[in-house]
Image (cartoon, helix red, strand yellow):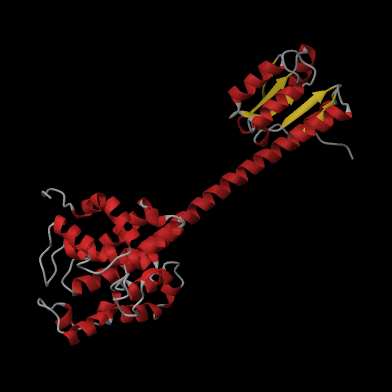
Length: 367
């Protein structure tokens, strides 16, 4: 069957083909073959060719490279192109009379696309080069499509994550409003938890995703307060022993509530949220509730949220008390007036507390 000549294609689509050969006649022959299908450029030796490749890298669709040349031979040029990662992006062809096994073996090992012997047969060299160029261009188009699809999927995933986080924040904020507190409390707990795990040694060994999931889980630390009667939740004075026992139950109720939300159980933050809701009132000395955990029995997530919760409660006005001055807050935490904390946790807390204090700054007002 007679082979049909390939149809010319847009020069703009094809890009630029670089011919590197010190023989002017060979350059002219190759230009004549490829000119109907590509824009062409010529370099008269290996060093000039290497410089042209680096200069025109974003425009090149292929390089035709002779082997025997002054300044730098073709193999030396190939080595440089491989070191610079060019051969992964631009197909390079050796067009040469030197076709020894040793030379060809090294050329292919370096990553040359094909070795074409001289004298060239026009239709053959055209087809071999054109097929590879089309393959590279198709691969690049496919890569661009995949990148766009990945970007779309990531954007959709982020929307879902933001929606889930918004729903969780809304639930937690509703509970805070029920207890006549601002929804800012849960956002500050989130931000303090995130900051301490990101900017101190506490977060060592945790991935970015794990840190974000712990911070998201912290938002639901007091979700169990939905089961506490208003009269106890909003009592301005000190709770009686019986009332305090009811209040303490919000930890168990919170964990139970989270267990009843199937969609949440599929979220990576769920194990942290459940643990934090149940254990954020445990204490390092074992005198917390509801399970009397002590020391390292308490998870890092629950420990960090526990301290963040105490810091925020002391720093802000509540129905049963006014806000304490910052110096008094730090003194109470340091002296254990609000429970005993992990000494390493406290060390990390005091390292960044100056930054945490900025979360309480209100624009337009003096601290």
